[in-house]
Length: 404
Image 1 (tube, rainbow, N blue to C red):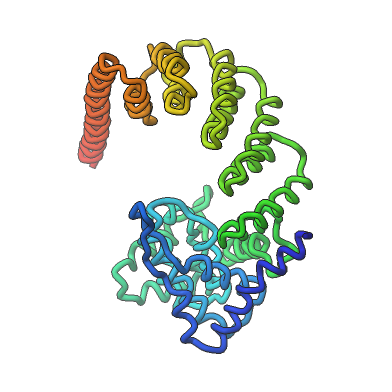
Image 2 (cartoon, one colour):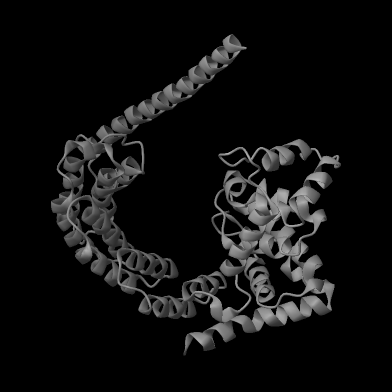
């Protein structure tokens, strides 16, 4: 099946849902945020896929009369982020915001402000430009005359943004330039979308095999660089195609230079092999990784060594017999000597599980003592960091008081 065929198939249901939503507002209930929890109690929105599908259909079929629907969809995305997305910003919220912003209506300023204020990540990533597409001066006048509780914060966000020469950063020309860039990012023509983007679209709605086809077609058009291989490996693994992801990662290892770069890629390969149940492959790769690890003691402070040590412990429960499990456990214990900040990256938790599997009570007691000591070290480090920040703030405040 060609990418064009996959694109049309992927758009069939969203286009039907959009046509239904345009005809009958009661259909919007099927696009509302619905808080649901999985077996582990994690929150998610059971209507996310349907809503994002309609947003994509709207991207490719833009009509002035759709503004009310677009506002509704943006509100649902805002709610979803507030309820289920503690950090990060993805194209779902950005697409909804852009499609509303493109209409350039003053009354949407506060809706965009809600989207921007969801979290630290949206405060940075959901651009102020969204608020200004009705015109910078008109927006400023509307905000100044508003009684909204965030009035002064919005004015500050817009007016305090200055260029190096002291001129206002936000102008109508700057906003128009941003709009033009967003139109390229979210093109109205489906054929103008990157195949990698289509792979992401397919994954969001659960079309794993289709997503894989888009991704492989995208890779066929790219040079076989580290970026291409990393992208392929990551997305294939996320989709559950672990055998293919493993082969791609082997290619990335073969193309990598010595030292840290190779060791890092080998650790990723070990994780793929372990996850797919290939114990022998993971063990062989772990031995290869030991030869690639940097010899400078400086690296004992880095996360690379913690993940290397942890890989030993994670493999212990998968070993085919107790002798091999013991060998892995002892080697992990040996490689851990001198490694700093063991309270990070789950190293000790993995170690204690491995020790329990082997059944070494003396080692178990020793690691419980290590974990207790590391917990105290972590708490002391956090305490010092907080104290240092407080002292710095006091010093700054004192300096400001003296200068005034």
